[in-house]
Length: 278
Image (tube, one colour):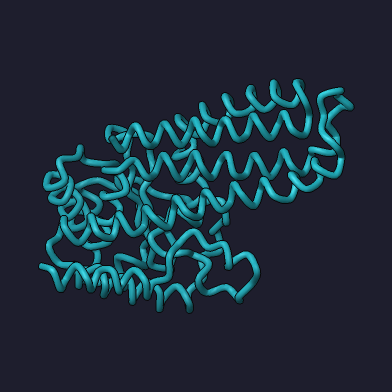
């Protein structure tokens, strides 16, 4: 069911992209948007995880080089009925983590050095359970596709004024309005998807470990450290992948109104509700 939802979202975002291409460029715009969407979906599906790992200089590790982390992931993967994912460590001080990959057999869990140094073993286990929950529900693929197409719609909007004077092209005023509204709509879709799935992953982690308080404690620490430790390599396009927004420590700006993460307070409150019904 979750895989069906993933492909449905991919299709829906692709159709939005093609529709917008038609609105700003007529038939030519639709064709170009369709070809662009095919290429982006293909790249995002097969290669985007490699690009993300390379960008953050992630280092692959195994049982010999990271025995403690490997044991935690192996145990929780077995509990979640998932294949053992590939493990990577990111040389960053900010404690954080993300999952990526296109399916169960190609899944990746990456954690920063700061996370392993600053969190307790129980808190690390809770974070890993959170990332495995993302893998279980194909969230890493949804996030990648939605981010790719959201960025593509924004790019298409920026170049909308240069599409040829097709007879089918709508009123220029309508086109200009769409150029502002469509990137915002795509961002809102990405934000809504990411926020809902963070809550789902938190709940999945709590059930997987049997200790919601471990994740509560981890989230509080992650939020605290992220405010004081910046991640220089962080990019807005990949911020939604992390368990805590890596830009938490940045000065407030209008862009933060469109955060892809629910507030840590909201997440802790929901976890507290799970503790009370245990």
